[in-house]
Image 1: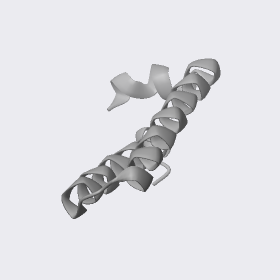
Image 2 (image 1 turned 30 degrees about the vertical axis):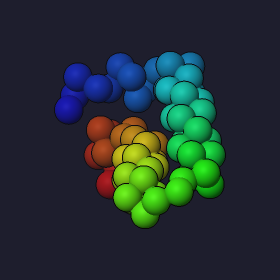
Image 3 (image 1 turned 60 degrees about the vertical axis):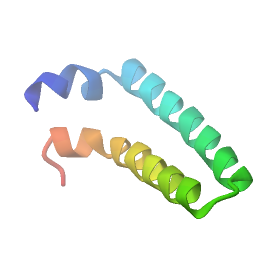
Length: 65
């Protein structure tokens, strides 16, 4: 996991990554609001959960978790 340290410890790069995650999460949330089937909703919930886990990547890589 040490090969991820350049991403998580470079503040401008990390903040750009978080902004991209937030943008993708917003898109997933919009899709969830418009979802017409339970299967789609479950799939989108999984996507949102995955994207949210990426927000804690810095802690995991740096051993804070």
